[in-house]
Length: 465
Image (cartoon, rainbow, N blue to C red):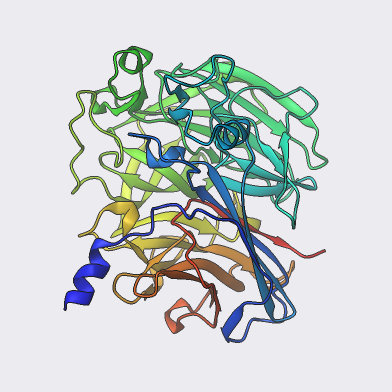
């Protein structure tokens, strides 16, 4: 009984203070022989404590699990951002988060980027992403930092951690918020073709300054959610929260044709809510359907006066947004598909922006704080109906599940689901490999680490060859 109480009080948020290489990891079960490549994971892992710093702003640390011919190895490295290098040389924290410099920081130090949110592979480049700065190029395998990548100077400013890659054309579509500077309502929008050339980059004004973590892309449209975690320079300058929950602002979603321009955006309205992550979206006649993980109130951010939001409402659930493009209404519909608390939704990315029949997300114990209690995986069909549900032993937590197809021409959903699990009692982590369409059977294989991988954000699989 006492042991369980200890387990419940512990979490896996704290950083690890080292970089490591583990060339031969113990495997329980058998890794599929067709599974050859690397799972790259990113997340906050501050090099130094910074008083009052938000979890979201810790230095990025990459974790790479390489699987080949039934064997597995591991490597982790901090992303050597300008901030990380300056703090490493100083031997102490110089930033307090969201770009705020500490009083003793050198005057000429301006870049507080942390590259800590996602890592993607596009047009032959591995890129660590964090929404306030340009992508940081990473050397595959070694995880060495190569520096910012600005597409020959054609892209500038903030760049989302959640760009979308069109599965049919290979085009990468992206946006950025705070595009006219910190805590401004401007957004940028652009695209990179399959060869890595920037083909478009423009800016426009949103209804208000908002933290826009993710966006929505279909075959022919792009949608920009402006939801009321608001940014305020006035608050920041007066020592109050730079980002805060202001539900009176309401929810806006701007809909634009991919072939159009920002002048063509139509703004839809709905009741206040917040969404960090989109599962998928597609077109259905004159409608757009988008599946998201929706919060009634934002977690992790307070009201403008510092009061916390309601924990009962600060949990995400699988929700369907529907937009009528016929011009009959400027309201979009919000329909919850399940009452289960969850986050980090993923699909078979070969169906990105197209109607999909499979989705997965990490689910949580609703009695525990949202991001500290992701303790299972849910598999759903294209209408949000549960096809499978796997729960971890009490106290253990799980990361975002990443889908890997069995082969390029395998049917949608035919493959594996990879997720990092923290084993609370042993205080270390496993990489779990599930059969994606039979998660209830539990992991088919576990790759066992001798240390823990702290709770992080996002990752992606890069196949060999």
